[in-house]
Image (cartoon, rainbow, N blue to C red; front, side, top):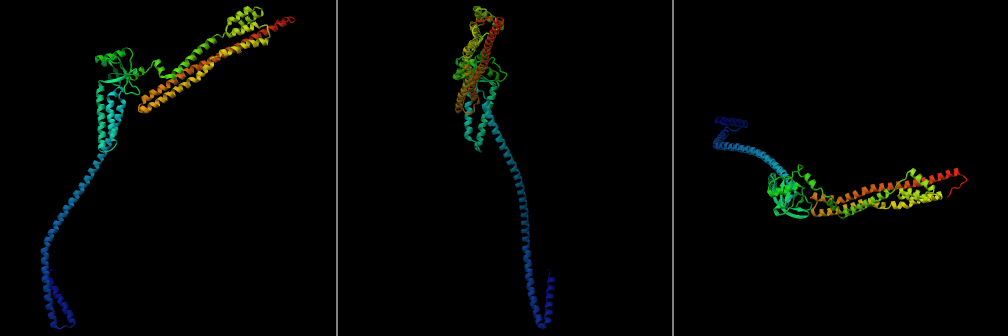
Amino acid sequence: MSGRTSLFVQRAALAGTAVWLGANALPAASVDGLAEKFEERIAVSMQAYRDQSARIADEKVPLLREINRLEDENLALREQIERAQRLTAENNTSFDALRNRVEGMKAQTEFAQRFLAEYLASFETRLHTAEDQRYKPDLTRLRALLDATGNGNGGHQTARLQHHLAALELGLKRAESVIGGYRFAGKALADGVLQTGEIAVYGPTAFFSSVAQGGDVHGLAQFNPGTIEPKIAVLPGSAATSVRSHFENRRGSLPLDATLGGATAAETTNLRIRDHVDRGGPVGYAILVLGFAALVLTVVKLFDIARFRSVGHEQLEAIIRDARNRNEPGAVALAHKVGGPMGEMLEIGVRHIRGNLVLLEELMLSVVLRRRPDMERFLPFLAITVVAAPLLGLLGTVVGMIRTFALITIVGTGNPRALSSGISEALITTEFGLMVAIPVLVMHAILTRMIKSRFGDMERVAFEFVKTVSLEDEAAKAAHPATPTPR
């Protein structure tokens, strides 16, 4: 506010006061004194106002400067906040990226561990049985270390990864050595005796030779259930000579199996009959003895049946004619030519041809009844063999399975080859039982049918003999009714 304005305000206030006083009829002296007092007070107030304005003016500049400074600081802080926010956003983005990267690396690590664990298991299973002697200690140690570290995180996971990598390095070294084949000192079983020598591995095939130890055992190294050492399959002919020459001269050819060991293994696993029988054990021998006895009795029965000779109608009439013409020696001679039970029955018929016809028929049929037990002898034994042989085979299988389960308690179920070998040996007795029972069953049926046929033929001949005699007697009575037929 300027000085003129304040003076105008003061005068207006005095004029208003004067009007108010005039209105109240104040004396003039009082009005003048009052005006002076107001002017003094106004002057004092104006002076105070000017002083205050001066102080305000003096203090305004520093305040403006402070305000400007604070505004500058505020702007700087805002810039810092914005920069911090940008950094925070960038850091969050980087953190998310790092977290995703960590998750990806964790997944890759888990995949790598699973892959390495599968590789270790595959490496153990794909090793040739002869290579177990060389790699089994290292693999056993790695397995023990992996079991000790468990499946934890942190240092344990790092340790497991290192152990898996050690297994991978072991597999790579083995792959490098297999490329051109390699040899190492080892042991193998030959006819149940542990031999020390040298093993040569070429691809999927391994050969053993005891030449280095002064021995003379050579052949193909194959899996042997229940032992870490392989068994030796002796190769035939020139193949064994090639193996020996290769180990002695460190060069030369080896028998090649294009089926990667399958054909050679199949050839060497073809056991001799004696070895196959030995694997059946005591039960197998019992079945074979039973089968041999059945075979002998079958041959005996075939000879017995071969003695049965039938007789033709003309031959039968000749015998009857000689007998009725009182040429009994001639009729008996013809009966003897027939031979066997049939000849015996005809001889009895010839000797009693002049007797009663009913008695004659009974006498001839008595031969059938008397000779039937003799001809049917040993057939019950064959029937028993048909039933007993499979049961004995089942008994041998049960015994073999019991041994197999006992083997499981020792070696566990992780060795299917050992178990399959035991089961195959257990089934040999079943094989023997069926091999004996089926032919004996067929032969029993054939022999029974042949015997029934032979005795049926005897009964037919007996009835024809009696019928022919009866017809001739009736014809003789008709021709000479007064002459009695001699009886």
